[in-house]
Image 1 (cartoon, helix red, strand yellow):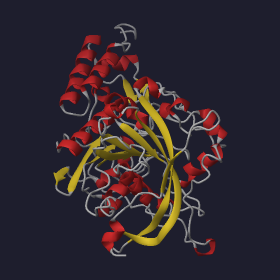
Image 2 (tube, rainbow, N blue to C red):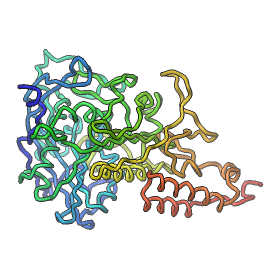
Image 3 (tube, helix red, strand yellow):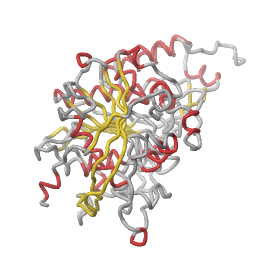
Length: 485
């Protein structure tokens, strides 16, 4: 098989709808989320599909960037969860494929449905969630053994011949009985399927114009964009499978397969560009080497670009933490998690949290414009660091402890809260607030000026700018003299 034939991807062997009944329904069904949603109220429907096929396991060539086949033609089975407009005339032509986050072991949507579901519903955008990890598949099988009997990324290598699995973030994220490297062909075959007018396509009869990918997946989405995207082609051998990428959080790309370790954060190969539009949204917690996400994304900085075969924009968000409660409301409910005999990761209940959804909604719109009309997104300022070498480099902070520089929403430009870069926020003491602002009107004036600026600069949608301002208007503000002044 020559290189060109290896690059051509075909359809999965089977894509079959899993019918919902009173006793058998999808894990993560829309009406079984922490905050259930009735899709019919928005003219949307939800369907679930079993996808099976044959996949290759890859390894790195000598350049450490280009994959090659290590083990060919291995069977796999996974699932697609599809939410789309019921009527084709209400579909706007954009499909968002989300690689589901597996950190809780069960599938979670974060940047896609988790934060942008209302944008998809408002704009007639179809969403497709992909289960990409062995642990998530096993949870679904425990939840409903019959419905999900055919799922699996099984390791084709005999037990006595297996190499030591790679480690990521200092811990083992896989089972030697499984091979998560089978996921790449599954992801590519799904993209081909969504663009092919065949009755097996979940969007058959819909006019699919562009298919984009999103995810917050410990580097899986980044790895696909930097190494799999240029290697896999549509059946014509030329066209890209995915037309754009919106990656949220995490720094360096992840593992290619069971035994191929994650990219090291300081390596030049992390500074990749993409053939198709690529936007990376980063929290403060991703940028350095501390906390839950010690990703050192500051080491992968490279200039924005919009050239043929070289596309990339990044946004570093001041004040934004790595954990949020908002997306968890779009997560599978506790009852269904516990039915799968999996520990429930309790929904966080912060006093307040950074509303990263406003950034992600605008980034989605900017990526769509970049894909469909060639309009380059705005450039974002970078967070400020000292001049120490890696790994001593530290983020510069203001008097409240917030990161300096970066994309700045009014929550850090006119703050009432101190944001934690691991997640959540704490209300500032009243005496601090009264020292920062002359009065309530002064606070609102500064907040509104900043909010309007984020809209004009292209980081927040106009309707979300209005939401931010309304939120500020309803904030409580201390009265002079309440703190003994």
